[in-house]
Length: 215
Image (cartoon, rainbow, N blue to C red; front, side, top):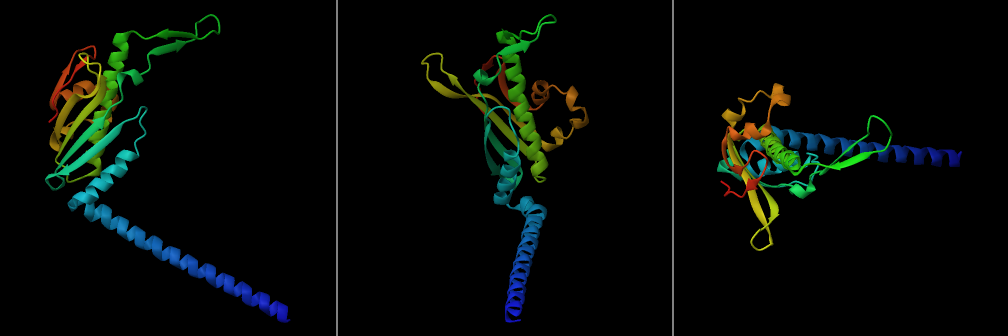
């Protein structure tokens, strides 16, 4: 009987420890949820530090096909968001295409024409900016303007050294951004879409960029 009683007491003690731990975790979870709700409902609307933290969380969740680094600044008490984007280099873009001939099973790999590579790069870097601007306005309701500048590492043709060249810099007011019909995204040309805003860009139709001074 003594052994049974000891086992019973041990079981009760284990149960009590587990119950106490559950209550502690429950209280901590509820506290975290309350803090998170206050953060989302109040802090990101008025605290620049909270805005920066929340925007960083949102941007870090984006899965880019090529490395894309973003730095940001919350200006004018959160009404103006400034973003610098380290875009991928054109050398990172696919330069070959593969296909299986109608007859036979041998894979055919061919080089893409240089113009096609540049056009794909042009669409990609503008698409990056378009996505980031949209994510920023969506994450921060109090933001009235987003200024985004995209740069890439390129070789200086005079010295051969690698330098940061800004490919474009665009400033977008929320009211203008909200005129876009996002139900028709498949019909939107992001290169043309960004051109409707205040933009600094020197680019040919075939995707040759000259460096610009950002806003």
